[in-house]
Amino acid sequence: MKRIIIIGGGPAGLMAATQLLKSDCEILLLDQKASVGRKFLVAGDGGFNLTHSETPSEFRDKYDSEWIKKAIRQFSNKDWIKFLKQIGIETKVGSSGKIFPADEIKPIQVLNAWKEFLAPKVQFMLNTRFVNFDENQVEVDISTSLNTPGKTEKLDFDYLVLALGGKSWSVTGSDGAWFPILAQKGIALNEFLPSNSGLVLYENWLGDLEGKILKNIQTSCGNQSCTGDLTITQYGVEGKPAYAINGALRKMEKPVFKVDFKPQMTSDKVFEILKKAKNPSQGLKELKLGEVAIFWIKTFVSKERFLNPKELTKAIKEFPIGIKGFRPIDEVISTAGGVADSEISEFGELNQFPNVFVAGEMIDWDAPTGGYLIQGSVSSGYVAGKAISRAFDSAQSPE
Image 1 (cartoon, rainbow, N blue to C red):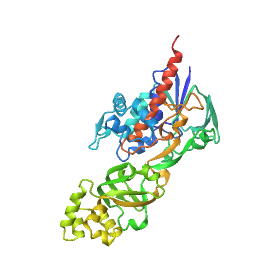
Image 2: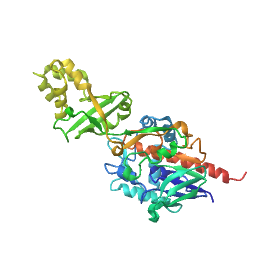
Image 3: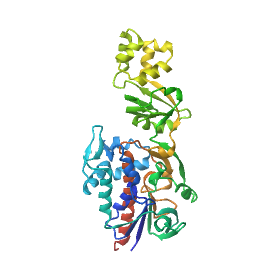
Image 4: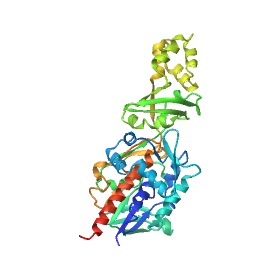
């Protein structure tokens, strides 16, 4: 019987295994941790966004890579929801269009249902760390499972799926340790960069504002924009409107983004209120700007501009903020970078290593939070698993 080895028990690896359940083969799923799905569970701590309910074209526009967009065409948000229902997980649509598990269903229940679905066919090998691979063998470190330091083993495979994650949240196993291993084989890789990261501001922007919230604002940078709330931290700002513009900010030598403090109001309306107010400060109050916005405007807008309703309107609608940088890569939600899409087929098969596939965040694609990261991972796992299933089943079919 042929053997398929999947390394990485996150959503990409689990979905690759799912596509192979009907094939006549041995499936081994390895993970370096004591349990699978560690990052999957951490992602559920702040609200478990499984995917989003947008139309297909709107959904794919959230991704920066044509490769991942093609993968999502093959396994869409609707396909993912349908699969979850198949394993007993009902979903609901939140007010913002995000898809969550139905009420009272916790992330661990989603993971356990998936593991139970795989259990009859898939053999899980835990505490097993990826070390190296070639055309037909993968070397793994089994020291932890055997409590024998330095103990490695080579496993034969007919197909191999590497779903080893990016480099953020290393405590979950997503530590990027595979990067130099693939680099030594001449596989083109793009540097890991922080994504969905908080933005570090210069100290004079922070004042005594930690914990304050900028509500219902819009950030913009390049062709990226996002509406929502920003939270002031001891180092800068956190929140989806900050995360969503990471990609555009990374491309700038001196990164600057703009904030619209009143995105729900036209510039003409803002100007009208300011012009009628007895003074600019009263105008800011009538606009119901919060403490953070007022502090920033009064601190960084010149007196001449502050006293000019037209210029003050522009400052309120297009307030520029320069950043020092991003948070350390290990604490950000996700990473950009990884295996270049020029190195893989549309199914994630490595050009240099036929029958070896990559999936999930170790491929260089980027997306915002809100269900897009999990969807990208399961879609990439789907195309890898499905490609192997088709190839394997084709080889088994009689002429």
